[in-house]
Each structure stands twice: as structure tokens, then as C-alpha cells.
Image: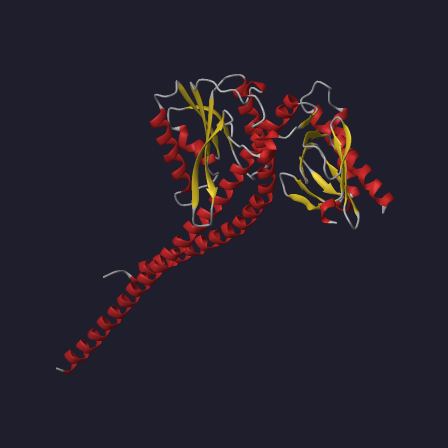
Length: 286
Length: 140
């Protein structure tokens, strides 16, 4: 027979777990709202920057700037954007699985693949693997400065020909339930085949085309990272919210099952006791 | 009336600061201040920290921008600024405190120091903000 005291203790501990998970769910929901606002705020800039860049790059010769130059892809850098914290369902695992799949599929294509790890979780995960790590960064609070730090290092590396291709793996925020895993090739900058009237118009540059490229390319590059980090942060909170919601649900189910068990056990104990009393009385009578 | 107006968008990495129809924009280009009226040639330029004035129907909008880019295509003006703040949103005390702090930091640094340019540009941005605030108060 299950011990009544043990059952009671278990119900108590599952209840506490439920409280924690539902509190975490609420915190994640609040953070998600903030992260969502951040993305909405950053999108206009990212979109406008891209518009300006597209119109500039399409009119430019790729030899004008080192970031536009295409080299034979020998060395590749993978930027893996995960989260600082766990308990967010399969959010991080999805990123790692995609990363490993990429490495496996492209092992022969490149002479070398090195990693830039963003978020504590990705650092911890790849620590045990035999991989070349170029840099790792802790996210903390997502900021433009952080994106700039990553961006500057990579721009520098590309210009110095330390690597020839740059791929970023990150989660794009779709809704609290769904994240879209992205695998974007960021460098070399791809030329867009946009043929509209804007490209044929006489265009004035000040100070000059190459100076503008020099300033605009790194900026839009950093902006890309900023957006990727924000998207990833919002996705993380969304994933955590969903995970905690189902954890709370599971805990509630478990409490229900344990309560039934507890009540049955209690009833069984009462019945046994009654039988004993009745049995005792009968015996005395005889 | 409407054909005399251009769509002006001022955006920063943090948010879209301004989006409205204006008659004229005066912006701090890196090669000198320039004015834009409707029908301007397509134009792309870098901006230095400075004062941006947008003349709308009802009022002149003053703002301090902290460097960036401006693109003019057709009747659209896009300003991509590292930072931008409307004159009415500038907090004088805050800017002054910031300026003081930056000046203090700069004193202890050598020109060669990597931190130097960071604080130097902080000072210039703060000075621009104060200047814009002053101009705005004078104008209104």
C-alpha cells in the first residue's frame, strides 16, 4: 500500500514545481512582449538600411570594396546564435542540430570551418566538441553594441582574408509558438538583381561612392547582427513561454493523478480500520 | 498642395523617430549642410552629427542627429541616423551631465587611446544637442 505521508509530500513538491514553472511562464511572457517591441522598433531601420544598400550595391562594381569581393570559398565561419539560458524547450537544440548538420554536410567543401558562438549555451555545448572557435560572446541584454562588437571582428577578418564565407544560424521570431530557423549566407555580399528605374537614374554621391560604401556596408552588416540577436532573443522567450506552459500543464495533470491515488489510499486505510473495529467487536461478542 | 510635399522618414536602430510629409529638409551632410526641396536629384550622402530641420505645414521640426546617412529618391527622403532626438525631447540637464562626464574622461586620455574617439564623439553629440535645443527655443 502506498504510504500516505509519502504521497502527500510528492503532491506538495509537484505543486511547488508548478508554481515555479507558471511564474517562469509569466516572466517569459513579459520579456517576450518587450523583445517583440524591440524588434518592431528595429525593423524600420533594418529595412530602410537594406533599401539604401540595395540601391547602392546594384549600381556598384564589386571591386569597389573588399566586402563585396568574392573569393574562392576555402575557409568558412559559422555564427551560431543561441541563448544564455536553458529551460526553453528545444530552442537551443534546434540551433545546435542545424549547426552540426551543416558542418557534417560541408566538411569536404571547406578546408576549415570555425565557429563564432553567441550565447552561453552555445559556448557550453561546443566546448566539448573538437571545433575551432574563433570567438564566443555572452548575450546578456541584447544591444546594438554587442552586435557591433561581433560585426567589427568579422568585417576585420573578412578583409584580412582570414575567411572567405560567413554563414549565420539563428532563430527568426514568428510567433510565441513558432520560430523559423535561418541559415543565411552573409558574406560575400550577394549582388541583387534589381532592375528598376531607380538604378538607371543619374545619381549623386557625397562625398563619393567608395567612401559611402565604406561606411554603409559595415553599418548594414552590424544591423543584420543586431536584428538576428533581437529575433533570437524574442524566439527564446517565446520558446520558454511555450515550454513552461506545457510544464505547468503536466504538473497539474500529475497533481490530479497523485490526488486520486492519495484519496484512494486514504479510503483504503479508513476501510481497513473499520474492518478491524468491526472484527474486534465481533470477537468480543462471541 | 500635396505635390509640394515629400515623405520624410527618420529612423534610428532603436526606433522610427519621425515619419511625415514635409516641404523642406535641411540636413547636416558630411560635406556641408544641404537643403532638399521637392524634385531634388537622387542623392546619397553621409551625415555628420548636427542639426536637422524639417519644415512641415504647421511648424518647423528641429532635431539633433548623430551621424548616419541620407538618401533622396524622388519625393522620398530617408535619414538613417545613429541617433536622432527631437528638440522637444532633449533633456538639458541630462545632456549637460553627459557632456561633463565625457569631458572628464577625455582629460585623462591620450589622443592615441582607442577610447579617445569614442568620448570625443560623445562630446560633439552632446554639444550638438544643446545647440539644437537653443536654436529651437529661439525659433519658437
